[in-house]
Length: 136
Image (cartoon, rainbow, N blue to C red; front, side, top):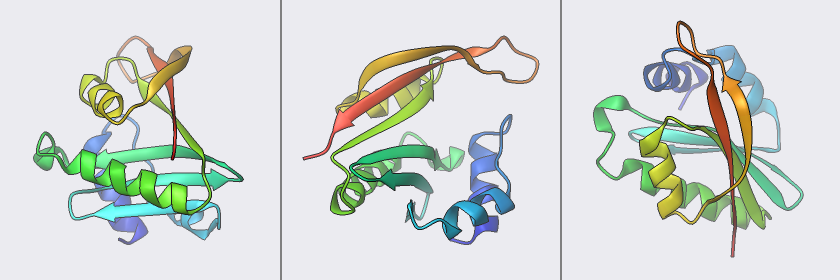
């Protein structure tokens, strides 16, 4: 996937806070970045020493609810582990029930909370849940 294609998919999945093609191009230049692609989405992670962070994760809205997210996440976790990560963490909006369910099915547990972290336009700020799981 090119940075432009990644940015377009991200904008479709996150219309209030899309990242630009330049943002993705910069991430992809970083050797600690791992991009896991799928025909209907992607996961972007950063691996530093034995930790991986899911920076962003998107599934095409037209293909959501069909199991693609689970496939992408499983591949991302496998590749992060192969890249030396022993654990992975992420932030998810508290009001994003489908993503929270996906992460719970994958064994993530909440380890923290950032109050009002996501300031979405024309809406009240949304808390970020900090989630984590071991890889092995």
